[in-house]
Length: 117
Image (cartoon, rainbow, N blue to C red):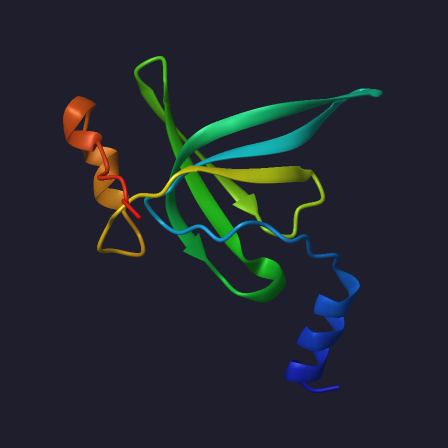
């Protein structure tokens, strides 16, 4: 079995959910399940998408939020079974696919212009 056949086989084994289209600069809310012992609960994480990377089953996205004056980033895999839903709150206008410059900015300078339709 060569590499493209192996990749197709692995992708056929993983279950993919349909999420709304989003890109870097958008503000999204990710609802995901957390297992603590025998209990499970749903927690939501709202922040700005910094990047989307990878392809296929290894595709991930990074979300950044400010929590208690500290920047917190979290990487979510698209193929994670723990993600229940993704909701796009605001569409942002940025010129880059990876907006890491946002890490250095604070307060009003860290705002992203909202897309108007």
